[in-house]
Each structure stands twice: as structure tokens, then as C-alpha cells.
Amino acid sequence: MSNLKSSPAAAPETGWRKKAEEVSLPEVHRTIAVPKTLGFWRKLLAFSGPGYLVAVGYMDPGNWATDLAGGSAFGYTLLSVILLSNLMAILLQSLCAKLGIVTGRDLAQACRDHYSKPVAITLWVLCEIAICACDLAEVIGSAIALNLLFGLPLVWGVCLTALDVLVVLFLQNKGFRYIEALVISLILLIGGCFLMEIIFSRPEVAAVFGGFLPKLEIIKNPQMLFIAIGILGATVMPHNLYLHSSIVQTRKYEQTPAGKREAIKFATIDSTLALMFALFINAAILIVSAATFHTRGQHGVAEIQDAYKLLSPTLGVGLASVLFAVALLASGQNSTLTGTLAGQIVMEGFLNLRLRPWLRRLITRAIAIVPAVIVTAMYGESGTAKLLIISQVVLSLQLAFAVIPLILFTGDRRKMGEFVNPPWIKTLAWLTAGIIVLLNVKFLSDFSGLSGWLAKSF
Image 1 (tube, rainbow, N blue to C red):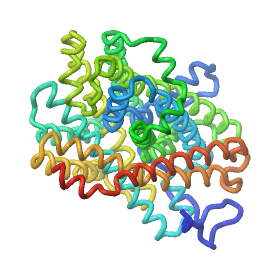
Image 2: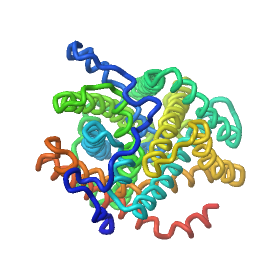
Image 3: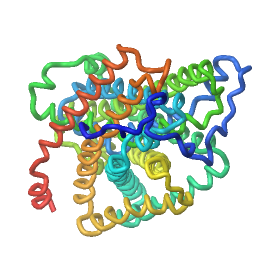
């Protein structure tokens, strides 16, 4: 990140290299009114929604494999890592909301307006690669769920996920609230499924609470550390940072210091509550895996298909596997809905390039679906499992290039004015960035022999 320097032509009074050119997501920008006369709870309801669109990225299919592996191999121990990841996410997403509300720019636009054009283009390419990798995990997750539930071949399941483009277009034309309502409904479905799974698996309550306490063993045990890094790497998603900084601007709040301060408060409450729900989902996956597999000596359950096949026979509840697959399908579809929005935000924000929404989403979906179809057709289930892992590695590689600019922008008084991050927030933010970067570097170094591993696997 040492080359990410602003242009000498930057305006000192604003801190930006150039003025803002376009609003973010213009078709829904400031379309949801927030009347000043509303009380606290009704105003919170008016601001609620964007946080839940962000939260789906923290419970997408890319998280499932690491949570399953952590629970089956080490019981409840890695719950503390899920909690730490969630606290990091809460902090970073609150900074995204602040950036969007105060500056009127999403993170992609902020990068375009701050950095030189070559640097902005480089960041755009890296971000597009990350979005495609994330999209890939979501497409494969949905395809696996369709295969488990209906026996649909994986290739056809991958192709079927392209229909989400039509869903997003239809709902966005109706109003952004309709997209938020669908996403929240699917989150509640996922939560309901895993609440039933927890009831079926009957975990030890004391052991569960004990798992949320950090243990030195996680660092000392290489296998445990590896999965812990995987959980962290799969939790904080780069595209969520761009997404959140944009969709908070769908609310029509007062463009005054007081109005922005209130918007930041309610947006932060919204994302915090939503991410606590994501914490429940991720923790529930690990708890169910630990209570079902680890306690019975089945320590090698790491793949989604294996968990599906073993859940009902192990628990003696026929519905357990079905609920697991339904939750996976809801998770995959939810993530693809928000992924298409993130793709639009990134392309328009970095390039100021306006394509018709259907064309932009069709391009995004094609880029994710084509490699998924090829690998699925050639290698079947084993290939999709490896592709899921590769997608998480790519996401890990790109994360620093979204987190570091976010912290720099929100810590710059020229850009943020009175809303600049206070010293304690800056310290926490840089500590979070340091942990994420170091752990992801370690995660990537463990995959230094990836080419040979893939050759052997395939």
C-alpha cells in the first residue's frame, strides 16, 4: 500500500484529488425518506435494512466449510475466533457507513477521487477479482444446495443461479425496500433452520459459552491456527465494505452536521444488530458441527456434502439434513443478490462507467458462472470443493486493499471534518487491519504450494 499516494493536484481544503462526479447507485439514491418527526424506534426502523444486506456476506457459503471443519475437529474452541471476527466486522462496517454518510461517496468513488488514475484502475481490477471469487463461492453453494435438495446436477444448479439477476432488477424497480425485505426474510429462514439444528444436536451449554473465551491453544496448535485463519479470512469480505458505504445513502437524511450525526448513529446500530445475527448463524454452524460430529469422534467432517449426508443419521432426526440444505440455499441466494449490487457499485464507483443494470449484472454473473460450470463439468463435487477454497484465498489477498484506504479516509480530518475518527477508533481500526493482514499473509503462505496441491487433487 506504500504506492497509494494522492495526486499533488489534490485540493487541500477537501483532501480529495477531484470533486465527486456522480451519486452512488443513482436509481435508489436517497429514495427512502426519514421524516424528522419520527421517534427513536420508528426512525431506527426507517434506517434498518442496509446492515442486513451487508450481514449476508458474513454468513455466505464461503464461511460454511471453515465453520464445519472447526467444529468437527476442535469442538467449541474456535467460537472465540468467530466472535473476534465479528467484532472486527462491526468496527469496519461502522467506518463504511460513516464514510458514505459524511462524504456522499462510496468507498470505490472515494478511491477514484483520492488516488491517481493508474492506482484507482489497479484497485478496481483487484476488487473485481475479489467480487468474482466471492460470487463463485456463492454460486457453488447454491448449486450444492439444489443438488442436495432436488438431485439437480451441479452444472445445471450453477446455471440456474443466474436467474437472481432478474430478481434484483424486478425488486429494484419496485423500490430498494423490497430488496431489503427479501434479504431479511431469507436471513430469518437461515436463522430458524439453525435454531432447529441446535435444538436437535443438544450442545453442552457450559461448553458453548466456554468456547467464546480465547485460548492460547489456538496459537500453539498449527492445525487449529490454520482453521482459525480460514475463519477470519472467510468472514471479513472486501465487497461488503464497498456495498455498505453505498447503500447507507439510500436514506434521505438531513444534509446537515446534526442530520449526518444522527444517520451515522442509526446506521451503526443497524449494522451492529445485523452482524450480531450473522454471529449467531456462524456460531450455530460450528456449534452444530461440534455437538453432532466432534462429540461422536467424527473429526474429519469439513465439506458441506459430508455434513448433509451425516447430520440426519447421526442425530436420528430426518429433518436435520433437509433444514441444513434449505439454509445453505437461502444463504447462497442471499449472497448472490447482494453480490450483484456490490459489482455495480464497484464498476460505477471506480470507473464512473454507467451500464444498463441488466447488462452490468449479466456480465458479473457470467464471469462467476463460466469457471464454475467448467470446473463442475470436469471434476464434479471434488472440483467445487477446491474452487471454494481458492475463492477464499483470492478474497484474503484483496482484503487489505479495501480496509487500508477505508481507515485512511475516515481518519483524515480534511475529508471527514468533525466526523474524523477519534484516536481510540484509529488505534482499534489499525490494530484490526494489522491482524487481518498478518493472518491473511499467513493464510496465503500456507497455500504457497497451491499449484502442486491442485494438480494432485484434480
